[in-house]
Image (cartoon, rainbow, N blue to C red; front, top):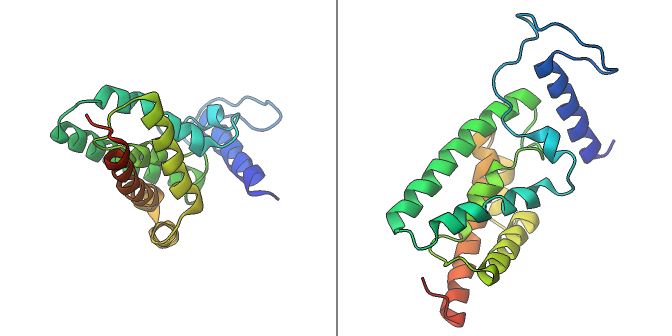
Length: 185
């Protein structure tokens, strides 16, 4: 079975568990044993319809970057640390829900990594395109040490930390571009 189909089966099973339904459309009344265990952490029913959910998660960071354009370093730091902490927390819950590590429906880690990649870079469509491509490149290829973090760190921190490390590598590239091309805040 393909990994994508496995992710879909896990997502469908988790959806059924959360919403008290079984395959085939049978509806069950929510009881203490099958009641939803909290808010849906990932929006996976929407994301399962899209190809490359990590790409969509990275794009979801662009409005946050636009809002932070020109913000102080302290504002960037608080925002990135807040997104990081929230991503770790929600990814822990998602891992327990899916009973698997780093399910493709978890995309908050891409938001955190993308924001790290563009810290201090002024927003424009050019910088957005370059930043997106740089971050996705590191996130998909997973050069050392990104792959090490991806395979050795478990739990919600493991879901998020490889993307943050990819973002840090992208941050170095983006600031190198900024010096060469003259991007300034």
